[in-house]
Image (cartoon, rainbow, N blue to C red; front, side, top):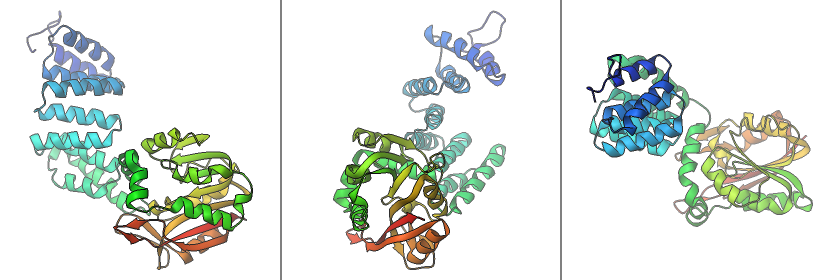
Length: 365
């Protein structure tokens, strides 16, 4: 490969590297594609081709090229690294993490693989796992980047909610068998509990414009579809939204964070439901405020949470937040709601043991 030269005497790889560094990645792509098409590209040229495509903003093509490079050199740490980086750019977190871990198993201490793996874990909301990777990183040239990632991890652990990346990563993995897992193994009944609560406070007598917060695969939507004049869903996980879309119940499915997804929808809904969703939030003030904005006057918010007997909320052993009755009642009043229903319930089981919870109905004052 090193013997292949251009008319001006510059080696192709050297020129490609220079073009990438000079923000002319598209030219580097064309140069390297010619080498590949004519059979003159070795493993190193293919890895530079991946970087050129990524620098040119062609994430999909970079991923294809990275897969090809990895298949040609499956035992090379740099090939695994390139594929892991391309997967991370495509937001395919589980596959990226696996490939970056493979790169480090081939070449322990590979600095860029360590940094990218830490980035992937942080994007997945796994601060502790990112910190574990970074604790083994001791390359002086990457110390600044390492320290910046450690600060991100520390900040993430201090937030009063589950990180959005963690929630998305978790449910993207669960999506294929979520319904069977929840219904069969965990005895999940939160949607039905909320529907029973809706009947108790008289919401089952007419149709409503409904938003399903953390809609998942659509189990909550299915429980309320018969009293919905409009049914929208919000969720962080694209894989879960794909399952919900297949139910053909929802008018609109929104990929977004509950704390901000309703900001542009003032007064649009009569009813918001959140079945087993607020367990991923400690401080509920932002989502209560968002619901108060999105609900019409007299609209209702119905939700389940796991119960806590403390003063406010705390993180349980399964990384799910628990909330106290006093906190929920106090926050409702502070955010423009009145409590119209408050019941003890069992929204799910854990290892065969009932999980104590609350089912709550709030009305916008």
